[in-house]
Image (cartoon, rainbow, N blue to C red):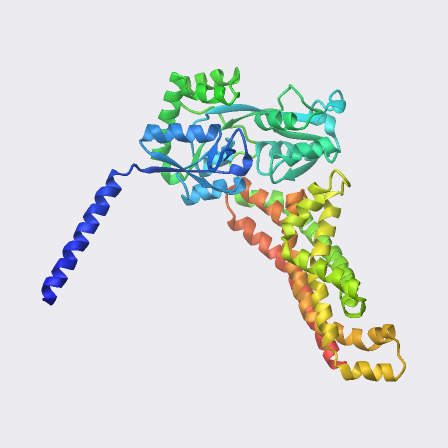
Length: 495
């Protein structure tokens, strides 16, 4: 009986495996393609009618490639600045999200032939249209762009030549809204983004003269060169029969530049030469060139962290004192502040301070970062100080009242010093945490250490060397602080 049961179970397992294999074989293979839906239309965006699916011209290019390969496209969300690293890891089959062609990218990835040609153009306010026509006219001015792009390389070069100030953003929406508000003097990005930005912000003007020319490509893992070659044939066929033209006409992006590009690709059989200011990047040479920028960014991180922590300690002390000694309405208000700040993300608070309040008050990016970090950490510091104040033995407070000391004298002479000793260790931990959380301020255009490192890593195509250098700089900033704090703790214990 037992043998028959085992045999029956074995037969069932074989049938399940066989049926599963048959069903799997009948299912079409997927073409996993990576993109960033945050980039928005016309590249990739969530369908307004059905947020579970994406639309855009890159979505249709992915579908075209999938059909040519006999596969079903499946979208994988990846942050734009992580697309290169994800492609190299093989997280998807191909990346398509307005990815620019460059010699450095070709050196480390399998890159398709270009399927769209764009122009880098300058966007200014209409009132400045006559005086800001080229990058040379913007000496000493603030010009916005996205990091790790051809536009960023152009601005970095212009910074060296004429003192222009590049301002990097995490997205392609806020550069144009900040230009309309007067926070920056111009934006340099490709024409697809520039036209969308000027439509959204009346009063902006796109200068007709191109600063540079670039191309959109697909990127694959360097081990997927064979798949890349098959995709190139599909793209060339779509150039010949008009399918690519139909896609770009649908999204109102077709222009006279595209037939010329397609003619070069079809005639020469290879992609046009990629435009790049850096060429094939040697990591050690790039490190030498980026080191001054990393050191400046580290200084910004240190200054921002120190000033923000000073603000946090001051405000946190006031909050803690108010919650211990204040009247009931004051305690209620301060408790609500602490809970709201601790219950909402710091990133959201930075967005509200810098972008949300822009119509009321236009805070400089560094000031908004300082206030955001300071007020956020003040809520946490206040809880440390309140706990430390309430940890002082009640007997000492009663003895102080018996001696005729006022509440202020008791706080200054007896309760405060003891509370400081108790709070010193967690204060040090909070300062180290704030030092690292300062990396979040890059979302409001402050180029601190982590942001500068991410631009460095994107340009050389690897996080190994930039990441190690960034970690070393953070350690160099935080370890001396920890040493000073331990010395203070030892001094207080002796006292």
